[in-house]
Length: 127
Image 1 (tube, rainbow, N blue to C red):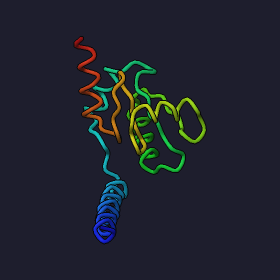
Image 2: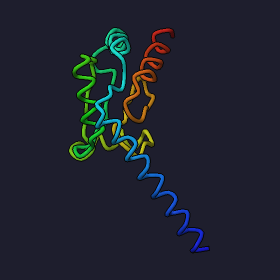
Image 3: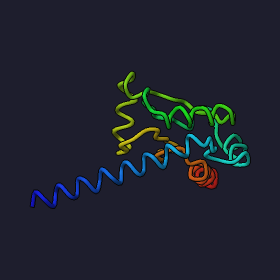
């Protein structure tokens, strides 16, 4: 049994490394997570304070997401789990295990996914 567990742990570690290197390559290439059109649609759909970004001070993906949102002038609020107890509580409540985690209209989105955020915003507007 322990040999199987060891193999499973090894497989998980390899998968995690592959994922990390794949995402790291995306960041190094400087590819924007969204299009200019998505940025414009998000700006139009969101009011200040609606989009919350839960971050970690050591999170490179958070830095990239912050840069894109800021450059795109998408309104968002950010908190850091290391510095803010209420931020840690919000993060725990989402059930997410990584940052950045976005919260929009009570729905959590792991990672910067402009298409998903836009879908949530548009669904809320339609109600």
